[in-house]
Length: 491
RNA sequence: CGGGGUGUAGCGCAGUCCGGUUAGCGCACCUGGUUUGGGACCAGGGGGUCGGGAGUUCGAAUCUCUCCACCCCGACCA
Image (cartoon, rainbow, N blue to C red; front, side, top):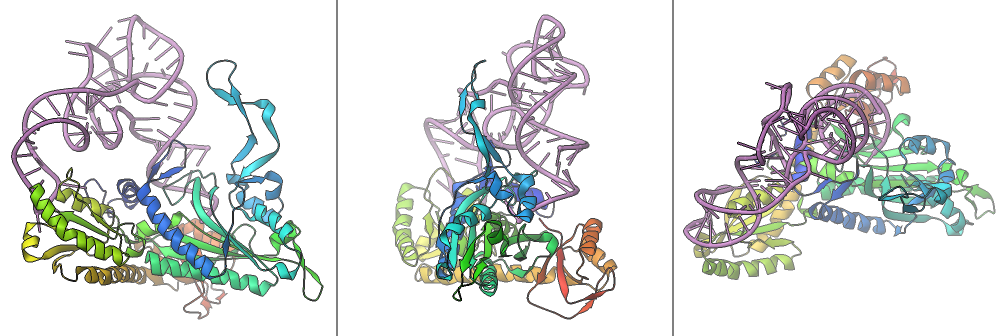
């Protein structure tokens, strides 16, 4: 057990808070609700970005950048949209400071009041559709498929590192299409991209589905989501993709001339994932020793710790380790040889465990004599002594095995924590005693959804796209239900 | 934004109720030495606007008011 890290079984929430800090991922800043992402945490985010960016480009998207500030009037053009975001917007009212005439410091210059106040973007649909208006005249200008990597601000009451912060980093894709069908296909393509990323790179299995009207993005006709299950049995919405219909085109008057010469409004989608994915990554795999990172996203995949008494010993170890490092790098594996002498090996072992490094090698004089190295796996905490000969190939294969093992463990956990129920009593019992995902029939009404939420704190995470589609009876009203929907308590 | 809690060295805390020498302890840090296969040991050393401001008092970490930040629980949310 890592020194000072609260056990998950004692207080899961505290375990998470401590782990983020101790593993050097992020910390709170001087600004309320805003975090500092530290180099190690940012390195993981960069790996996510890199992969996602590649996947976006493979699906025909281009990166662009739109302003941080949005004129206040833009936000109000789409009624549902403004209603959804108005409560959590930061507003810029002035553009200049001046020296405080009454003493030290500076004050806002009252003479520098903006004619029209600017909103710090909580999302960019409005500024982007205002821009798209100028880009689109005919069907020949379509589709437009832009993505931007940006920060956004949503003035949250209660914040938690990575899971909910007032400012966060994300990407937002915004696409414009000539047909409804094409916009829906885009929306579906992108939720699939997110699901693939979560599963293949983060090792986090997700359920794809549709949000209920209640949980839909403000301004969308349909919201697709990927829902992941955390180790404490709570769900985490990890990515969303929205079919916006013609709502924003109508709000910003974006029309195009079709091939037939008819004028019509443009169809839209938007989709995003944020630094919240870091929270999902941490909570899905990590244990009481610290982080467990999937090799594909680990900034350091292999750490090598020398064990020595004298400088001569270290020199001998270094001579053997260097070629191993070179071979690993040749295979594209990131490796750190930690020959710093201000920490003892035991400390380093604990530290690399805390930071979730997938594979650790230790080499001392005993290994030198036997031409071996001690290899420790972070995911299983197991150790074995292996021959130096061919260790690079062995590790390359092992990293794939670890990636797969982490994913499989998460799948097994979810399977164990997913329960199908037929009655409301059963629903409450499972939620109370076991938690996790619950599949149950629902009559499709907002009233029942709200009633369940008020009585149990559980919400409909999504109407799953895959899986059992057998009709049945609503657990609350007994009315007909087309298929079971996914319930859980959520972050 | 409501209810509760916390704020004292980089980190974790004691001292606060009941005001009174020079504000302590552990970890970390610096120096020297011994060590090094799972978070080393000994000796010496440095580091404090006691969260900020105002007040009460001869005297405030301690009492009062106020503001701020963080944590937990609720309502809202990626």
